[in-house]
Amino acid sequence: MTHSHHPVQPPNRQTLYVAIALVSGIVIGELLNLTLGGSDPLLKQIIGVFSVLTDVFLRLVKMIIAPLVFATLVVGIGGLGNIHTVGRIGIKAILWFFSASIASLLLGMLLVNVFEPGLSLHMPLPEVGAATGLHDVKPTLSAFAQHMFPKSIIEAMANNEILQIVVFSLFFGVACASLDELARPTLKLLDSLSHIMLKVTSTVMHYAPVAVFSAIASVIAQNGIGVLLTYGKFIGEFYFGLLMLCTLLGGVGFLVLGRRVFSLIRHIREPMLLAFGTASSESAYPKLLQQLERFGCDEKVCGLVLPLGYSFNLDGSMMYMTFAVLFIAQAYGIDMALADQLVMLLVLLFTSKGVAGVPRASLIVIAATLSMFNIPEAGLLLLLGIDQVLDMGRSATNVFGNSIASALVSRWENALRK
Image (cartoon, rainbow, N blue to C red; front, side, top):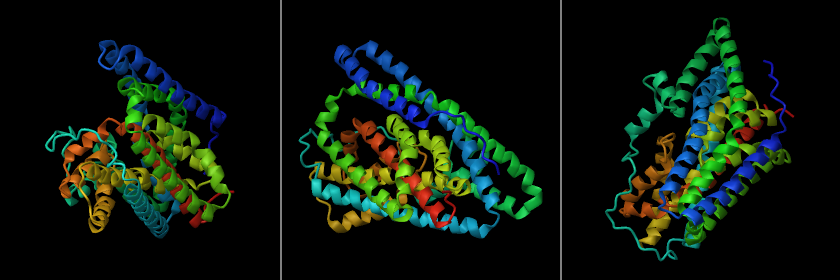
């Protein structure tokens, strides 16, 4: 299998553009907020334009994801050649995902109990029955099954259900592996498709700074930087938690990969910034796959581990869920016993796996968890205003967690190129 030549563009320049877009988005957003104020109709129009710009980018990326996941997974599995290798890699990945998820849930729980951000809020609490405006999706076993097993691969691709695409690709890839000669042309075709999709990614990424700029500018123009100050303590503590989580994951990475972990971080800077700016870890997926292969991860392993990670291994979101539930409980003055908190962790560990790919999924899981422990769901309104700001950190952490996972599994499979 030959590696196609990627367009020669210094990777750091693109990262620099995204960073500049991020900063100028904050500045322009704040200026708009100060000059036009929150309710000005002109501001609404400007924000409308911004959201279109962001939306176009996210749509372009989502357009890449389904064919890319399908092609890379099938080529990966077909190329690995036998079901045992696939099973071995899959089990290693899932074990790592569960350990990382438990670590992030526990760390979140520990920090909320230490910092107690909910107690110091002194904000008027929403009415207990207030509407949160979220779709009422209860994470149940049947919902999880429906979410996992596609009834039509076309529908799964149309709705960008990563988990369903993964399940179909597993069956498809294993069948290819067992047919050997007969399946060669299909694998060749899909290999070519994956390279084409990565080429499309390179093109779409030129537009990334615009999307990051408009995403940030619209959030700040709506709420002003003042929101950050009101919630400053909570945001600060949450980001501190994310930083600790990344340090922890990076530490494990260092134990396994040695000094190469720093090279990995250099490679994934841009996908992380992208996820941060657009508050969507999906937007970084195609770029992340490219960068992990450049770093030296085996493309077959990445093709298997990354899509699984995007369905199961969202470390930042996991931490956010414990943070949010306990924060809301504290804000309402509800004291959760340690036993309840541990039950909550177990609930979150499994419910969070069932809603991968649902927009604002973490909020829906949090709502379901709150109602389970009789904490008023309206408490979510406290977080809706800053959800985007928190989402930026969550998404970047999710990207970091998944790249560490891919690198570690590659290493354990002795498939990491020097």
